[in-house]
Image (cartoon, rainbow, N blue to C red; front, side, top):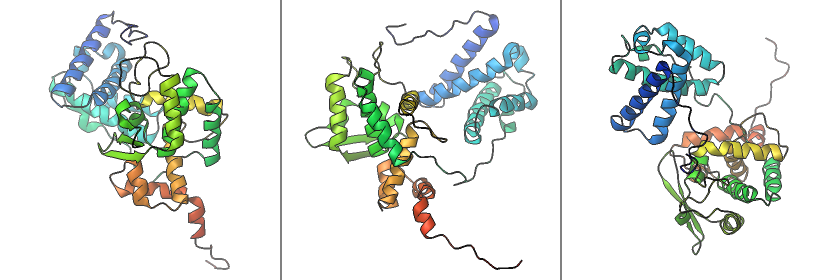
Length: 322
């Protein structure tokens, strides 16, 4: 398992209930991949949420007990999950639970289709303000990471340079391949994970130097074509973009940067959007760089341009009697 990159190994199912749950998750995964044609990442995330529900049900997660499942049980689980996640994340949970409940009914494991009883929290467009690092904090994190000359430090600095200068998503970092960088033409190819679009961006000198140093001095020798590889054995690419969250959070803590908002790669992405807004870059150009398909996805960053908004704010009327 260590050679295959499966460490620590998943605990083996030992009790009859655990064995049944394991078989159920396997069948559910096969159905999503084979019948629905869902992407491996989507299958993995939905199986994970299904596993949480089955774990929560405990001894009730048997074929006999599942047949008696009601909307009250579903509500109880969602209340349990709501205590640990925000409204936006809870909406994602409800989507995954609907899918699993629909499959349970289709396979005659429940007596009724409970997917229709799942109520997602109401979200409104532009209701929240995206969190972003201040430009000074970004430079502080980059400077602190650059001083770390270990194998991990050199790799992390190259990753942070890519995120901070281009604002690309963590998933796009994880899938970046060696042939995506044209060193002669000084161009880098980005495959946008959400839209499937491809962008060709100029390879900034400071970014190119950071990536080249990693490739020459720090990257483990491996046959994988992904640029960024885990620094410890087994030497494999990052499984997904979420794997970079701990990396970025660790670098924020090492630089003593405290933020009340996001502490992962998206904080750098938002910071890049804000810096371009303040540099009077058009919303269209910002959207193209960030890989947005719709303009509304970019307009949300206008709420972070506080200095510009303050300049056009109306004065509060004084001396007006009610």
